[in-house]
Amino acid sequence: MINIINEWEFKLSAYLYALTVIGFDNHTIASKDGADYRNERISFLSGEYYNVLTDENIYKTLVELNKDNSLNKKDKRKVKLYLKIFKDAKALTKEEYVEYDKLTLKANDVWENARETSDYKAFEPYLIKLFEFSKYIAKKRNSNVSAYDLFLDDYEEGMNIDKYDEFFNLIKERISPLVKEVNNKQDLVNTNVLNGIYNLDKQIKFNKHIMKYLGFEDSWSYSSVSVHPFTTSISKNDIRITTRYKEDDILYSLFSTIHEVGHGMFEHQLSDEIEGTIFSRVVTSGIHESQSRLFENYLGRNISFWKYNYPILQKEFDFLKNVTLDDFVRSINASKPSFIRTEADELTYPLHILVRYEIEKGVFDGSIPLDNLNEVWNSKMKEYLGVDVPNDSYGILQDVHWSGGSFGYFPAYALGSAYAAQIFNAMEKELDVDNLLETNNFNEINKWLKDKVHNDGALLTPKEILIKATNEEFNPMYYIEYLEDKYKKLYEIK
Image 1 (tube, rainbow, N blue to C red):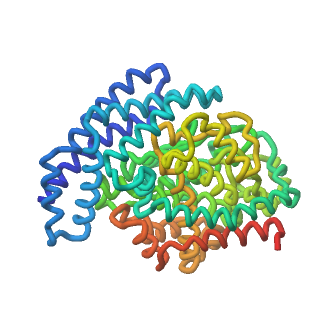
Image 2 (cartoon, rainbow, N blue to C red; image 1 turned 45 degrees about the vertical axis):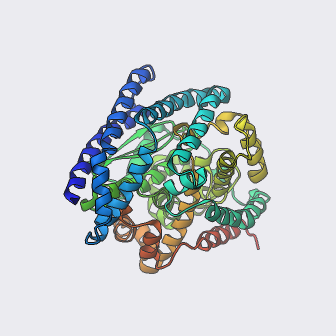
């Protein structure tokens, strides 16, 4: 009977292929004026996908297979994951499923325009509808579990409010005070050394070099530009990433590119055996984010990374020849509270996530009203980061996630950063990471990651992946101590 599921799974993958390609175009090259026509067809295809996904005969087969003790581990895991997806999908009627899909498509279009004009009031009705629809979906799926617990587990298997509260309380206790200490010593790191105009063509050229250095090959990848950088995996040999550029800020595109390459490398290094299966599609957000944050911060901001790459950057931009390697590396690791999450440094980043976590949690438990969430946002940014948000484009409108109804996703970003610290610690015990970075041997790092983290995809749970890679369960202290050691040293804090 497992063959029946495998054949059905191939059909699902064909629909997802079409929807994924269209989705990538939608966020990159598709015209704004064509949105309504396009969205209607996307919604139709989503409805057809729903029909295939919720086939009652398939459900009966899954139920029978779930009783079969002779199944191997891989097939048992597949059946378990599909039963969850099936039950979640069937919680809604097809009409509701399509209605929600249309809402997210329209909300995304409205968000893009609202972000450009800093017009939160234009987006607010859609955000309210998305929160309310999500509460409805959660109740239909499982009325015995809180809505937010349900969504947190969707994005990171095994996580819930209690576990995240414990994690974020640690952030508040240990990292929040350090942010304030660092902010009082801003004169110790001069970020002005990077001021200048960076020709866009040269930026693109250097980004291409960095992608190649990281092992991200043209033969199986594609890069483009979008408002919000993202990664799309069409298949393991068709990985598409986007970035964005500023002429006066080389770091703006550079680190978003390295970040997205981390995501893309994960997708490319999945085992051939699981390509097109559920194991390649439902890797948890925290585990996935651990790879992008590992690439961006633990490797990409490492001085050994730049011992090889900085001379190449200096050749592209002459004025950097007056900036020493040490000053450059200090500058790219500087910490200063800012408005934008995707531009935040390592130290302040988890506080950006804390703001979003507390808002989501409050909306779902009813302690935060849906009206004027932008004001709640601004208040929390002031509380945790000490900044006064100038307008809503720099505030509540900056991220795409809520326009797609992705509630419960944000906390996995901070969790991924913490996973990355633990994985990096284990990697350093087995590899001479500094030497590999200095000598352009990133391939050895990718091999280690494929073996320890990437290969199995969602065949393993996050807990199992961490144990396989690090020989222990999740321990947030690796993250806390990494941040404390790094920034106390950089800012001479005792």
